[in-house]
Length: 371
Image 1 (tube, helix red, strand yellow):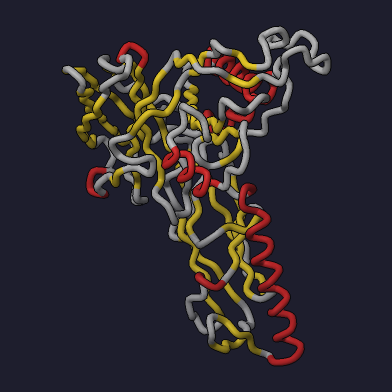
Image 2: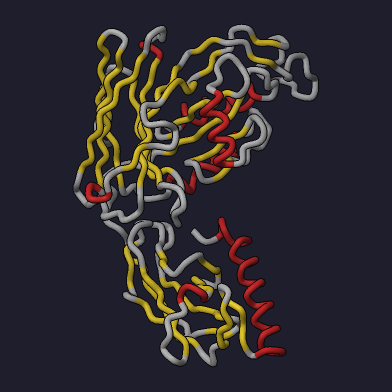
């Protein structure tokens, strides 16, 4: 939770500390949000509770007050285990069990230290699945390597799903490609985005599968939601019923995304490995500069929700509740035997928590229950 944004937090802390020191030396006050305020003589923190379920959802709220009992939580830097966090609400994942120390800093004035204990969550009701978006293009000569590896990863882990987002080729959807690139700063291919939170650092070696561990920490998260899909085909219409089950009360705004992808798409693929002696033994060594019969799986086709999702009503996001929504897609001209429906739930933009919470998929015309 903390390390991913450590540099951002440290920049903020260093800026606050710098201006705090100047204020002490020269002015005995500090400019804050357009107003001058007195630097506190001392600060203290309090917690609304001292134990928390380590499920990624349960939270502790930290309140920071100065010597006059004025609440300065929003302008103080709060630390958990010596790492700064954003805001004053703290949560822990299931891998962060134990005792954790909390304190605050306001312009170099450090508070007292309090401790919280995490409680192991109950057994998960739903399995944790991981969603990845693979940015690629038929013109990308290095992409066969990543296709090969991702197919291998999925073959060895049935809870990993990869969707191909093509760029500037016959399989591309320009709107989706440009939207996701802009949202997540994708500037090149091949690039892999996991759970819409972080880029996978692929190691460049087609035979070295150690980078599959890049997905590991996502699988270690406890699933607090699950998904089920019922689908049917009538003529050119694919009907989808997406069910979202909740194993916790969730106050964050959530989005449901439903997309349609196609497997077994044969399309020419550039290949920089052909007769390339720098890569002996590569499976594409004698495949030609252009592989004419290259098979692409999980190619994005369309979405009834848009790629950014449809909002789930907040009153549905309660433990043991279920949210049901229905969609239809026009599959005219598509081989329905190769189609797959995918649904995932993610946090809406501009929130502390980010990314995909869980995902489910099924072949078009079939059903998949919660698992």
